[in-house]
Length: 258
Length: 254
Image (cartoon, rainbow over all chains, first blue to last red; front, side):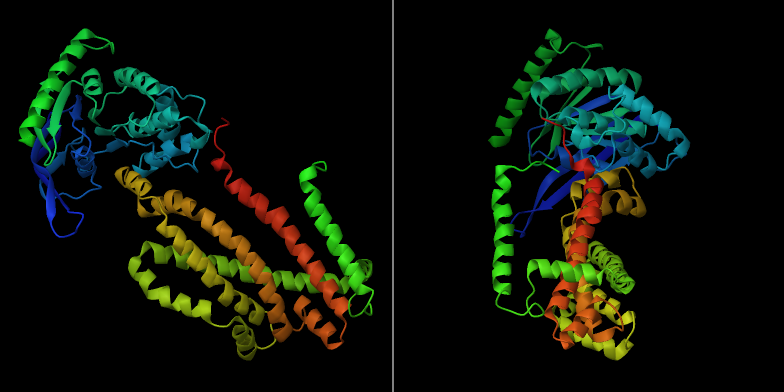
């Protein structure tokens, strides 16, 4: 057993150019290690390849070179469980809230006997107790995203991938969701890899922040956020961190443009 | 029933206008050539005062539903497989085009040659004409499957069977239901034509019989009563069923 939940070594990814004639490098020899139980964020500008990186880790996008290893908590299980919260909820709208979670449990071959307990526990955790029989389209966007979070947590993943999960919500709802996510994670604590373009979101939520540059994506800065939990969104220490990081970002962007 | 509203006035007037025009035209002809609305109603009542009329209708309904069910089963599965396996899709594409363009009336005649006067001939005719439409429709539906949901299911490691059951088939249901209602409308019209050529009993046979006796009133009476039955089945069974299957589509009241 290792203390690393995810190890990425020399990862490379190319996409064909729109003209179809050549290829351009999206990710170039990227290496990254995420410790078990930590909350790590990757921050980068739109289009830098953050989502591509998550999709490669999730196994729905092939990569060209390098290696991605996900260690499962139970060393005996060769296949790690991956929970994924996408930008949009991606719920099965024809299934009730409860059945959406059971879909993930069935997909993961989790024993039927545990389903009721898991559904109850995780819906309660995201604050949706009582919505079991409702259909997703009856819920607000924020509530749908909560169902998606409950679905990802319910499989008790070795790693939880989150791809800008609050970017489709209005700012007030997103704020509340961030605070609630912190509260949820006091009770369920998987390793989390969170992707965002918002430095503020990253420093508020995570312990580790990785900053990514664009074309090709590479990590140019790793920062540990030492502010203890529970954190307040208005904590001045977080603001200071954010300011410093913004400066550094612009410095790197200018360098790249030269 | 909702009460009468001004918006319904045009359709009400249109119905009255049609009946008046019909009545006026019927004054120029013999009742057996073009009966008036009231005479037609009387003819229908007299037809359905005999037990054999129900047997005739029952026989035809059996064939319509057998043809419809086979068409839906074959059409949906072929369409689904064509959509999920590109090579199968390319393979069957031209076959389906051949079936779609082959003249319908030829099937009706061929069925009689091949199967004689039996239940098989009308059912065979219905299936061969209707199932290609269902296939095309469902195939079209597979092209609209949401890749984001497929990715979601893949990340959560859904196996093929679960993916099919909970992700693909529900997304195809709108296409299946639109095919079902069109197929139903097609099936009963084809079944009647086919019965006229290749059945010993049925509504189609009745139409042929009264045609040979030059009794337009009886033909209209049979045609109108069967049409009414089909409209009823659509309104009382198919439409409510469809509404129930898609009840999840109702969004939150805003």
